[in-house]
Amino acid sequence: MPHRCVSLAVLLLGTLAVVLASIAQQGPTEAPTGFDTATLAQSAGSQSVSNGIAQPAGDTYALDQSKFERDHDASTGLGPVFNARACVDCHQNPVSGGSSQFTEIRAGHNDANGNFVAATVPINDGANIIANRSIINDRALIPQAQEHIPDTENIRALRAALNTLGDGLVEAIDDKTLQAIAQHQVDVSEGRIHGEAVEVPVLEAPGQTRIGRFGWKDQHSSLLSFIGDAYLNEMGVTNRLRPKDVTTVGKTTSDPEDVPDNIGLADIDHFAQFVRGTKAPPRDPALAATAASQAGQQLFERIGCVTCHVGTIVTAPTGTVINGGAFTVPEALGNKIVHPYGDFLLHDIGTGDGIVQNPPQDTANKLRTVPLWGLRMHPRHMHDLRSLTLEDAIERHRGEADEVRERFRQLSPAAKQQLITFLNSL
Image (cartoon, rainbow, N blue to C red):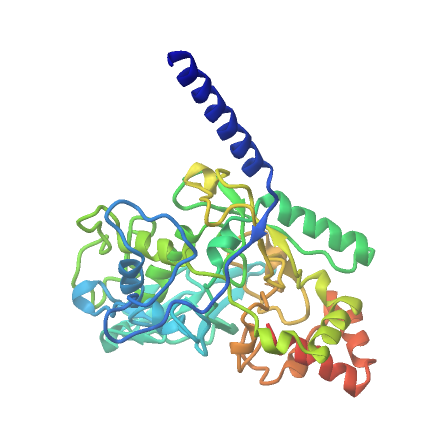
């Protein structure tokens, strides 16, 4: 009997080893998609479904979403200057974490050498200033703190608040993958298209850098960095990554205002966990299945849109350490096939706003390729939301996109409509 038990144990261990080896050899799987983070007035997050991401001890996905949707006021650190009272105010269409109709103001000027310098804004009737900051907030807690662009800051732009659904998957894309996409663009276009990958600091890992992928200027490479920066610059709430307010005029709370809760997580941790747990925006399955949409997809690829609006990317393997050692890609995000229809690189397509948020200076007239997933939820288009039709947005493509735009122009009206039908399925 003991011999049989030992033999059985060996057999079971051998079977387990084969199963584990089989799992390890499996290829990437499709990332889950869905608009599954409903915004609710009562019981925020109670009906939401995450992508399966594991939660920290004591945390729940509903709690993460409730933090994302919580309104702030002066007593909880809002302001003194700000754009919105809650993350969801700017990221809500059609569900929490989605896109927005809101734009923010950016400004600055060029110095004598032609290099961009972030704005210096007088407030409080000139008694105080907010310096070295390209964002200009629309709102303030008191009149004395209200910002206005001075005439000296003659570079001015509007930028849309971005979709965050699926951004955990974007964070999990390996740097080498983005570099390979950039090189492929050069190869297939004979150098006319050349996405730029910029190394930017990882705020939670001082001294470490990674290729940027968040924000219109790829100014952040990690979600926690992007969120900590936005908590200060969009809502005025200081946190461990951005611990000082930009002005003391009208300030009533002490820094940092975002402190850990009873389970040891600060708001920015809950926000990051929420965004990392969102599913990628889904396609419209009925429209995607039509002959017109499928023909439009072939045209999209044939005329070269897909060179920058990359249709398929695979995230890094589960267990990959990223963000300067501060984050490990979890199973919910690792080895996943995503369809962002974007490359997360910077390009000059003639719509640049002249603003630099991270060196080098050549990024002034470049913007990140907008991912097209979830496009059917965008009634306005491009970085400034000035294009109200998809055809107008395409027509605004110049610079690196000149040849692709010309190919679109040469399509018949029926073919153009097929391509638009495909875009409307995203």
